[in-house]
Image (cartoon, rainbow, N blue to C red):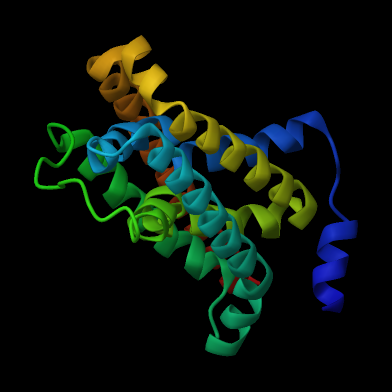
Length: 212
């Protein structure tokens, strides 16, 4: 608990640091890129049900993100995992996800509209909004920039996701299916670059610490 308080109070607040926490998490969550999946899963549901599912999904994502942010480092200590280990593993996961998104032709057509009583939590809340990539990003950002800035970035990113999914019908009509696919591909390319950076920094940290 003491370590957690130190991380929150010692964080340096600045617009630059906030952007450095917001942007990677925005790319990792990739709400615009997830929009086609959301539309595919909810296409046969009434607008009122879609919006109810959006609230449920965002609350689920927020709960998971906060729990992992608070307890994740303690779990690492218990398992003997360093932040560099997790950074490399997370970077590999992000890279695989990005490559998959960049190479697949589009939304998986095998995904049919599901039972509205269950899809708000899984798969909408987790893993579509908060998945392995975003959880990895949250832990690393918390370690680097402090938990207060990271929490603000989580809240703002989930607010963006909420608005995108809540008004998914209007957004779908405005940008069209091709526009949503283009946004998803750009986000995946940025995600791949961030993944390579995470792997590089993780290896550098291990090499540096090993040479001391």
